[in-house]
Length: 511
View: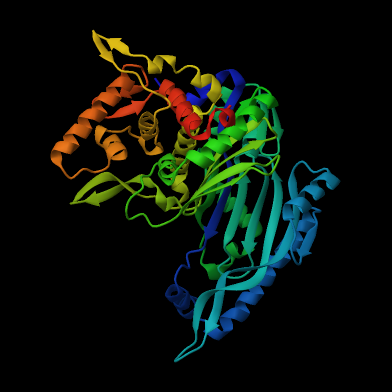
């Protein structure tokens, strides 16, 4: 039986629904010209062009792409705009949708100048070489209202290697699935503020990563890139990758005051108490001595609405913010999947076996993106379960201070105002213990440090064992089955977390 998230169990009375769903997803398509040596061989041997003539050839192909964009816009009676300077494309697109009262089809085609990876000639000794470099070029954006995916855009570079980009939003896709299934909902922007059947909505959302993505992406690419039909590309198609994936968990509160009262405490707790080890643990990782990278937390509480906290580990993020004062959103953003693992078949010592490998950006790993992000959101949410009304929780510590008699043996109480006891509570609550629990040795090191004398280590270990037992008999710790590890119970998360917070911040500030 699946154990409910302690945060959801604790605030069940204030919640009406929860929904985990993909949000922003960006795919990229690459033609198979990854190395400069391959490119020069292709121009010399396949196209049989002089390298100095290749750029003139590319200029002709660029005009084909731009002309196709103008023709497609005219065919659908959609505007074609060449944008110069800085523009908010999303605002322009929304304006066109409102003015033209569009519900489906091509919205517009936008042409912009952007610096992208393309090719140039490099002169030196011997023959000039074609090399990849960033250069300004025209980029076409096709905005559609798709019957299945809602608002999406297709972006194609007009110069070789014609890198392709597709943006879709999982919430817009889910809204159309709910509409087709006859399930009532209210959607604002990219969030649902009302769901008549949350369980059905979750079942539909869980299908998003299972769609035949390669076929859909290929179809969209051929719609706006006529060069894929040109004989000089020899039938080459795009290799599709996941460039950026956002996976959100939304908690819909019954009313705005319930979230308004809780949300500032959640932000403050996350900003003050979540360490680098905690953030890595939420993402399913451990802080290794050879870890190369930064773990940064950025909290903006001066914006109302719009207060949010963002934790960044290398190029992956964990975020928490509210939507419309009624929805609490936790979001994992994956830009660098190689920080995570996926099981793949590999040959080891002549035997075929499943092993954990660094995850790449291939679309075949979409399912694993969901697993990693969903688990990160749930761990983050569980760590926030200690936040509630600390003043009320503090009044419940009377039984913690009194001796507890179990099987004729008395176990001493704790003093919530004593520094050593609070250090113990903080040690067992550390975020790195969420994944697999903790051993006696981990708490011993946190409380006493590493003793060189073996007899001192034994004394410290015995003392920690007694402390853990005193927490265990009060239902604040539980043994992990078939191991020597402990974990903090839901009751322990609530009570011990409130005591630690009150000890450091003071009762008036926490209440």
